[in-house]
Length: 78
Image (cartoon, rainbow, N blue to C red; front, side):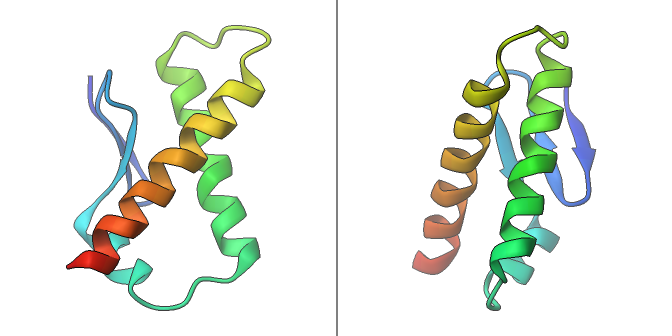
Protein backbone atom coordinates (compact mmCIF):
# COMPACT_ATOMS: atom_id res chain seq x y z
CA UNK A 1 0.00 0.00 0.00
CA UNK A 2 1.30 3.43 -0.89
CA UNK A 3 -0.12 6.47 0.87
CA UNK A 4 0.95 9.99 0.06
CA UNK A 5 0.08 13.06 2.07
CA UNK A 6 1.72 16.44 2.23
CA UNK A 7 4.79 15.26 0.37
CA UNK A 8 5.30 12.05 2.35
CA UNK A 9 5.01 8.62 0.81
CA UNK A 10 4.43 5.56 2.96
CA UNK A 11 5.22 2.51 0.93
CA UNK A 12 3.97 -0.34 3.07
CA UNK A 13 7.12 -1.69 4.59
CA UNK A 14 10.13 0.48 4.09
CA UNK A 15 8.45 3.32 5.95
CA UNK A 16 8.21 6.97 5.17
CA UNK A 17 9.95 8.66 2.28
CA UNK A 18 9.69 12.12 0.83
CA UNK A 19 8.33 12.83 -2.60
CA UNK A 20 10.44 14.72 -5.14
CA UNK A 21 8.47 17.86 -4.29
CA UNK A 22 9.33 17.51 -0.59
CA UNK A 23 12.98 16.79 -1.42
CA UNK A 24 13.23 20.05 -3.35
CA UNK A 25 11.83 21.88 -0.33
CA UNK A 26 14.37 20.10 1.90
CA UNK A 27 17.20 21.68 -0.07
CA UNK A 28 16.08 24.96 1.44
CA UNK A 29 16.42 25.59 5.14
CA UNK A 30 13.59 24.16 7.24
CA UNK A 31 12.65 25.60 10.62
CA UNK A 32 12.50 23.40 13.70
CA UNK A 33 8.72 23.81 13.78
CA UNK A 34 8.40 22.72 10.15
CA UNK A 35 10.64 19.72 10.74
CA UNK A 36 8.61 18.71 13.80
CA UNK A 37 5.42 18.93 11.75
CA UNK A 38 7.00 16.72 9.07
CA UNK A 39 7.92 14.12 11.69
CA UNK A 40 4.47 14.38 13.29
CA UNK A 41 2.72 13.74 9.97
CA UNK A 42 5.05 10.92 9.00
CA UNK A 43 4.62 9.24 12.41
CA UNK A 44 0.85 9.58 12.15
CA UNK A 45 0.75 7.93 8.75
CA UNK A 46 3.09 5.15 9.90
CA UNK A 47 0.70 4.53 12.80
CA UNK A 48 -2.30 4.51 10.43
CA UNK A 49 -0.50 2.20 8.00
CA UNK A 50 0.27 -0.23 10.82
CA UNK A 51 -3.39 -0.49 11.86
CA UNK A 52 -3.45 2.17 14.59
CA UNK A 53 -1.92 0.02 17.34
CA UNK A 54 -1.89 1.39 20.88
CA UNK A 55 1.41 2.16 22.57
CA UNK A 56 3.56 2.61 19.46
CA UNK A 57 3.69 6.39 19.46
CA UNK A 58 7.36 6.65 20.46
CA UNK A 59 8.43 3.93 18.02
CA UNK A 60 6.44 5.56 15.21
CA UNK A 61 7.92 8.97 16.01
CA UNK A 62 11.49 7.66 16.10
CA UNK A 63 11.02 5.66 12.91
CA UNK A 64 9.60 8.70 11.11
CA UNK A 65 12.38 10.93 12.42
CA UNK A 66 15.07 8.46 11.36
CA UNK A 67 13.53 8.04 7.90
CA UNK A 68 13.31 11.80 7.37
CA UNK A 69 16.90 12.35 8.53
CA UNK A 70 18.08 9.66 6.12
CA UNK A 71 16.08 11.25 3.31
CA UNK A 72 17.57 14.64 4.17
CA UNK A 73 21.09 13.23 4.02
CA UNK A 74 20.31 11.64 0.66
CA UNK A 75 19.04 14.98 -0.65
CA UNK A 76 22.12 16.79 0.65
CA UNK A 77 24.37 14.32 -1.16
CA UNK A 78 22.68 15.01 -4.52
